[in-house]
Length: 616
Ligand SMILES: Nc1ncnc2c1ncn2[C@@H]1O[C@H](COP(=O)(O)OP(=O)(O)OP(=O)(O)O)[C@@H](O)[C@H]1O
Figure 1 (cartoon, rainbow, N blue to C red):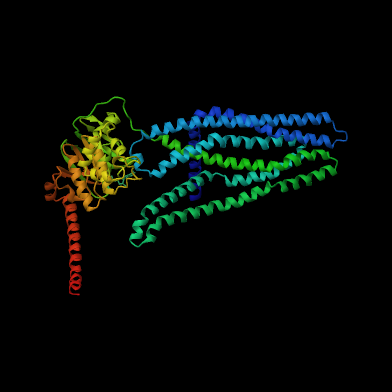
Figure 2 (cartoon, protein in one colour; figure 1 turned 45 degrees about the vertical axis):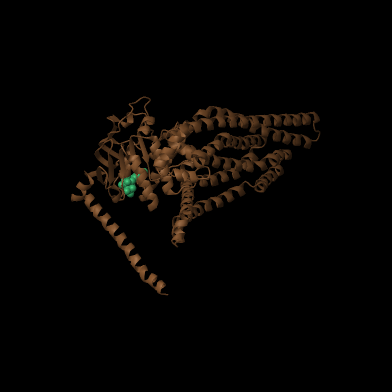
């Protein structure tokens, strides 16, 4: 019974995958489909032209074997073969050139489409994916499409036409020997159908996901290697990486092992010696029984032997075609990602009054993360979001700059639904400094100018001084023209201050801050706090606070629990109330006291040592 259920599920998954593939072919390859079909027809004709000279040469041989050869016919056949060979060359290279031109245009349009799409998908789409995944999509999958458009289809058509034409000709020469050739081909077809059978597409997807896991964990492993080795636990960093490569190896061996064995058997069936032996044995019987002219064997020896390799090429072509096709499905997924609606016209916010009205949000349907949130953020005030891990703080904060759109209710800015604002106006009004500082691989200046392209040097210096990063930038080899990642290697805290300077330059009336100081060292944290104090003045600020001692001075604290606001008030009100905040506060105090005690213990413990040293 469970087997039946599993089989039905697998069948329906296969059907869905096929439908997606068809849709991807229509949508992603649609614009080039008709031209590709014409190019494929040209390649098919070229492939026929490749077989014809062989046929003519076989006829020449048969003529030469005759008791009185017709020399005129021989020369005509040879010259025709030469001419057709020339035509084939022209058609084949013409079709290839054309397919490359079609591909160049397609790649250009596709890259434009994807770039435009990436500028319209919600920003949250990027936070859910590693940069490696996005790169794979934009580079590897687009490259795979190049292979599909410029090569795979045409090669596949060529690989199909060649054995077909050969086979038809051989059937005409001697249908019995011709049919005999079908035996190894049919057996090979059976073997290939076992390899490329129903589960193949799913296995290929699993294989690719294992490959991605290995590459992701390799990056993680390399990134984290210093930390884990510094703690003397090199094996720990290994763990996920090891798991990924073990899993990959297990899957690969289980999948590819049988495939390789089957492929070996398949290739042997089409081995020229096997085909030759088969044909010769049958021909001997037929010739011995006067059922066949000996000269009829010539075309089989000339062409029949090669039929195996053309069928093999067809098998490889089919495999390559399938692999390239799965890239178009992934690109279709991106193309179909729901976009943020970006109206052409909209109100322009001025003061920065933010209001959450009965806001509900979930990342997946049926799994709400925020439930009926009502909240007002007034200009000139700071609101801190607190709550246990996973309570929805980041999610709530990220809804203001439209990383995602609300599922229910609405968020307004100066009374207007943020979805009715042009995104350019929204980003001018809402600035954000997130935990994960995003600097682009350009100069420090370029990074700052992202916020305001027309800002002059004086403005850049002013914001960098305010963010306490100006002096550090001057120390870089080329000052403001140093390139991030090349000659400008900034620490986490410095990068954070640079992003604060950028936010200052943007001068947005609303600011969303996500744990801006979480990873900074104490000295850097003090500098960041000073920079933040300048940044937040006179704005509407929403800050996600993980460390409660940093939010003593805020105007309003909102406590989230399981996606609901469970408390709100000033810090003093909430500390004295007997609610979640006071419990979180007490836990925080206990943790701080414990840290303090441990530090004091460590200091005391070091005193005798010092004394000993003095005495000695
Ligand atoms: N991109 C995402 N896709 C699906 N679920 C998500 C995503 N991001 C967060 N979640 C889920 O939403 C819930 C709220 O997460 P969120 O990150 O907003 O909480 P948080 O209070 O900011 O947590 P933390 O303090 O640990 O950062 C969690 O259950 C989390 O697993």
